[in-house]
Length: 250
Image 1: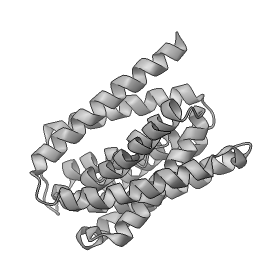
Image 2: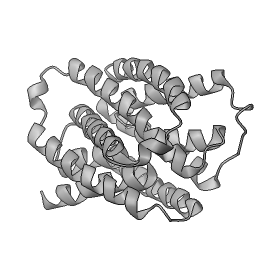
Image 3: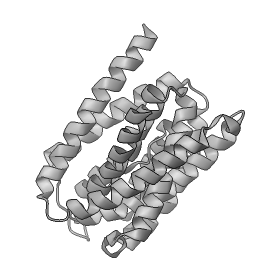
């Protein structure tokens, strides 16, 4: 239980510092430390990330940095995508979802580490961003992630926002996609009483504290170090999940 609580603080710190990574940590914590079955863990991870992102946004100064126009564009399509992704996830095994989750982390780490390709506002096309929102939403619902570890690299790559504005905007989008994905996944569960609500609420509460502290600590950190640090975190966690998951296949 001590390891679970320590990891809960790390979930919040990741969301606060990087604007993402909550479910990247929440899902492995629930599967490998709390011993939850993958599909149950996916639903629980979405609740944890949704709760943390909502309160972190409301209780911090991040909302002042949000690009609300971009958030609206990506939020609507992300919500629809998350609903469809959760339905697709119900058609495959939990091990398949975990494998897809790890592979997505490796892909996101490459984009995050390499930096961004800056675009001005005129070059950022509406169809492109709507496509990004839908794709990230589907992956959110399918794999049980909040989507931040995909959204932050995507926003940095396809818009002119800097890291801190991308981080703040991602919290809004994580909020929308995670709540939608949680609602759909919970509805698909045979019995929602299987969710350990006490544990989920404790992890969420500790995560909120960690998120607020992470935002405060990282204000003056160099952006390139934040990007590369997050990329390294993704690679380590992806390798661990693939090792564990492939072991279950073999």
